[in-house]
Length: 357
Image 1: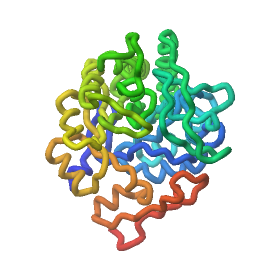
Image 2 (image 1 turned 135 degrees about the horizontal axis):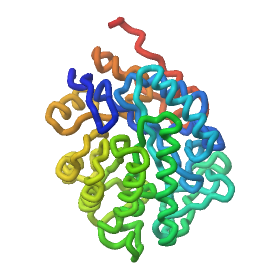
Image 3 (image 1 turned 90 degrees about the vertical axis):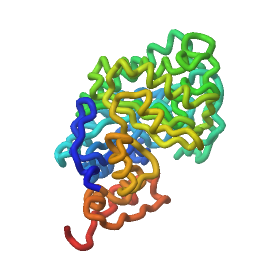
Image 4 (image 1 turned 30 degrees about the horizontal axis):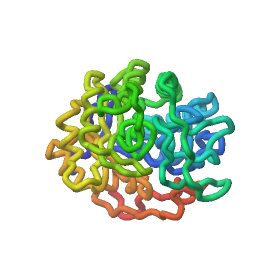
């Protein structure tokens, strides 16, 4: 597995190894969407990863929708994120922030007063969300964004990218899957618009392409990546041609020269997302979903990508890099504490205590 431990460069991002920590919502921010001390420790512990992609973070109040998820639009949030990036950098790590506007996948119970739930079209997602206030609730019915409002949402992302740099992040990743706002625009089932942002695949990918262009201009294309999973139906997403839509987005942003595409394995049989990304994107590829150390090394040796990201394995193994390097067993994690407040099941997983290297 030696290839996993070789350095690699993705745009302006210098990775000391090819093991990436994937973004995972863990619901440890406070009620004002401000990162907490537990989050500082959690990310510091995992700084041996070649790259950490910090959890999905809202670029605006309207972008919030889940309980206890962070944002980066206020001075208090930026200041709190600085403690995270300083801890990671102090431990020798590199960290980017995933920007996630949930769009219609939201509940008013998880938003600050005055925030709205918006989407490309006024279609409620057939899904439920947990709220600390009232428990499990249906997602909100969204308000369709007016044509003249879309530029304002693009500006929220641009400002969030600048805020992320101010907070010390090495770059940003745009979340373009899992049924959140960019994917709501991209998918034919959730985008019924008849203007320049609806209809053809080229029109439906216009919004995420404009966001990526704005962020690239603001902080440099070599510090911007994006994440896709063609065919992902999470949060009630459907698309008549997910492969064609994904290819259209890759083609639209290809001239930007972005740092990387974080490409997830497609759940659809017959759709090889890794091959699609190779054919339509010249940015570095971070492969994701279902890898262990051996399969990750094999994929890199076969030239499928430049790095591999791990999610679940990083939960119970803060020292995942060293465990993979020395062939040590991987610890499991407690699913009951994935989204509960506090350190338990979050920053209290130990490093390897077996035979020393």
